[in-house]
Length: 149
Ligand code: FES
Image (cartoon, rainbow, N blue to C red; front, side, top):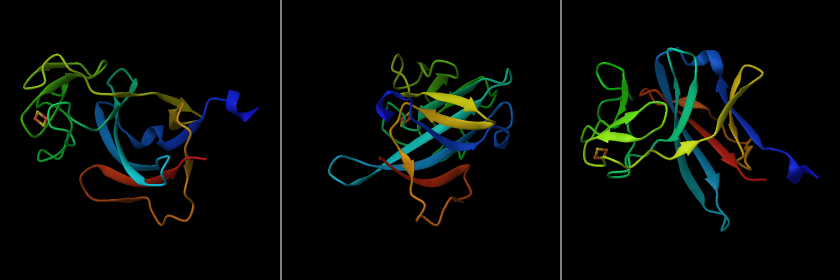
């Protein structure tokens, strides 16, 4: 019965991300073998009040987009930008349009705003209530531990 439902996981209050800004979340999930796997994502809120989610992993070298720069945007804020070698990505599609991974794309994460919360959709995850977080590490990233059912 429950398998027919769309699984959602609340990441943060929608208002916790200002328009024209982005925030990283350091999620974890447990894979089939019981191992904890990093699942870093970035949630972008546009000037027009859309929310876009991507796995926070540059297609070029697999690092966080906010590595080095500490933030997710190009200087003019028109694109997402990888701080390592400067690849730039369209905010609404995740497509890389300049830099070493030109033509590749960020992996999208399905999001919806439900009851004022930004939620991950379609992932079978539940929160580990035994985890002491969330806490912030100072570079716009929040750590949250999540587990599958
Ligand atoms: S790792 Fe992102 S551009 Fe090289």
